[in-house]
Image (cartoon, rainbow, N blue to C red):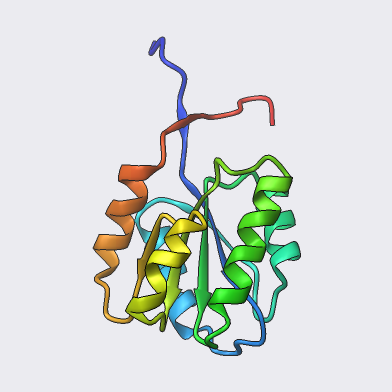
Length: 143
């Protein structure tokens, strides 16, 4: 019998914020993360920063993968990061994907975004980044 506690899979919330109505990339990422053994929750389209943070906390996720193609990243990301801080949930890793200009990335990282993955990023790169940056957590056997 193994004396170590089992770890649970990495839990990722894939979210589409704002008025962005394009979710093909988010669905591809969600599928790749599932195929890599992660638990993935997808919020659907046009979510507010408030609803994304609420869902992330309720679902006890390790990571929020935010996909933005609308150009609203400089408004939505700071709001979401502030909400995570207000809720004392800064331990949730936040990564961003979509069409984000290179010039905007340092500002987003200054707000706490761990990484920005642009179009064409290999799926294995994203999977490995999450594995490298999320500490394994013990499975809750009483849930």
